[in-house]
Image 1 (cartoon, helix red, strand yellow):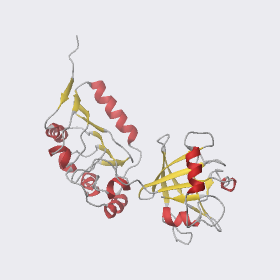
Image 2 (spheres, rainbow, N blue to C red):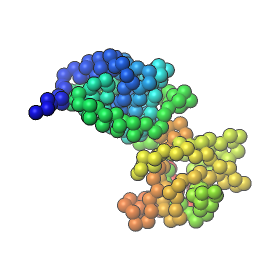
Image 3 (cartoon, one colour):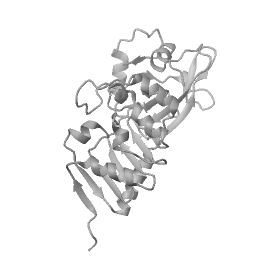
Image 4 (cartoon, rainbow, N blue to C red):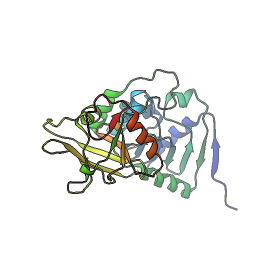
Length: 291
């Protein structure tokens, strides 16, 4: 009978994770939801490692993730990625993987009661690495860290555990007039939405490229904001007349989105919200609002 390589870890779990990270001779793979001020000390990852966290506006602005700590690893050669609403805590090092409840934070290491499973099975370690690799879609660069550090606010509570404030949100009807451009999917948010939600004005000398993540599929794409004579458009591949576009601002020029078709789950609730939500910036045409 093969030896069982899985073990329940309790007590001072972070001591074991930190030792495994520091002693690794090969790049490590980590997905950990929240990354506090002490995160880089708890996870001294070597250059070439991959780290996935929730560095969305909601997490950074409430102090759950500290971008300054992430930047220290980035400056040391670690590739840092962000996935909004990530809640996994998975670590793959040389010869051992951990899967459990541990965020990379002072509270997790010194206050909270945590539990984790460790495994020395090569198959388990590979499975953990493969899953983390699948999350490495939106890599943060120096410009992203500059922006995120400006949004950071220290946590108000002693032990924040979940995102308290939602990411800024846009809900908008997709109209027949959107079905144009080279792709046929160039949606046209009204000027009020561009200004209040995207922070973009048609008179800006340089229009940004937006990073878009489909919440339903996980696919990440980069799309340039396109200026026309009177409007600006952005390519949403799934856009279809009569559907509703829902977007969340999660980072610097980064947006999660989904397109909900008539008859699909959630369409009715979004449609009612569009018709019942007061929007002082609305003038005519398509219904939309931000929250």
